[in-house]
Length: 200
Image (cartoon, rainbow, N blue to C red; front, side, top):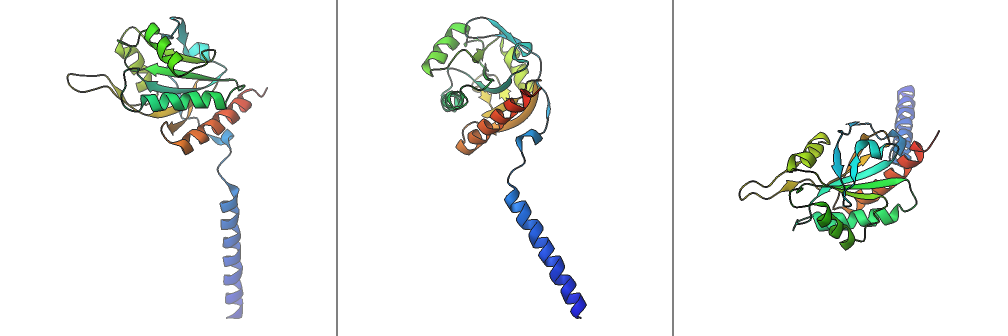
């Protein structure tokens, strides 16, 4: 009976130590962010009507979102949050990419005005559009981001997720683009990922 009791106490103590260890371990380090899948290839133009493709982002960690300039919903908030992320990560080798899901209207000159409205640093933030809606919507589909063009009385629909992509063009995470805690985690993950990518 005594032996059994001592065995139980020892087992319970061991279990509590393991639980305490897990509780204080904190979140998994960013280098353990899973590689989800490869970003699709694309060839679009930015707000200066300059071509930008996946190959141009190679070697850089980048953060992407999908918005459109006429959006009366979450896009202004998302773009404001992206602007704050850009300022938070100033000095880091990180790029920012906003894909328009309304490329029929969002021509380069429109995106240029939109960029200025939010004070975007265009040295590392591209607002991308294409010749037709399928061009950017195909990128969204390839990144597993929900996006649908306007049809009849149905408005444009798109996800509010931000996407974290590494220097090899691999998707490493999704973050809610309207939630402060998610954006803070995105900034931390992006900075650490950029440091890892810079290692020889």
